[in-house]
Amino acid sequence: MWRQKKAIGILFGLLLTLYGSVTAEAGQRPVLGSFSGGFVAGEDTNYDGIPSAEHTQLVVSTVGIFINEVVSEVLPALPVPVTCPANTLEFHFLYNQAAGTHFFTGDQLFGSYTSGTLCLNPATGRFSFKGTGVYTGGTGKFTGASGSFSASSNGRLLPDGSGNQTGIVTGTLILP
Figure 1: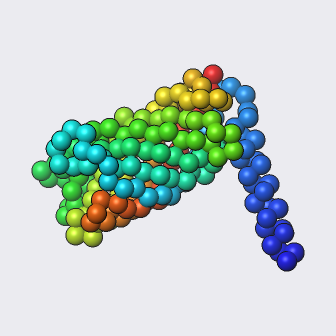
Figure 2: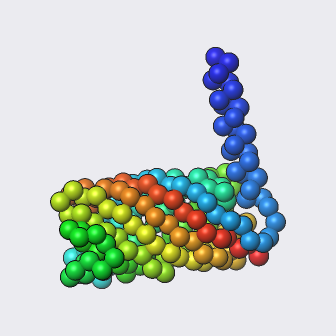
């Protein structure tokens, strides 16, 4: 029982520390975090036969804890992989936009990828992703936010277009 209370106390202290990081004043803030979540197939917005993906992710970072909603769609695979390993398909983004809602305050932070590469093994459904992007504003404490980030992840695409992924994000968030 004592160990449970101690673990809950440590977790509560960590959450307060992360919550406090959002209430800081303006300036540059380093971003380091991890994320995990799932996705389902969405609409094919450019009618090329490849549906978008609608992601829901839990992000724990130096900026706080967020629930991210991400919508992304890739272009058709390159004829031959350029940066991906052999025996994989290489995709680049048509678009990838995110809205993260801070778990404690409800303030939102918006971001958009400026480049990204998805490497998919069609035999196993396993994939890896690397991309870079920019923060494009937000609400509340994140109004006027800017800066840049990089993310990488690994996951699995299932035959029905759903799947899961885990990854890391780093960057710099600038608050006015």
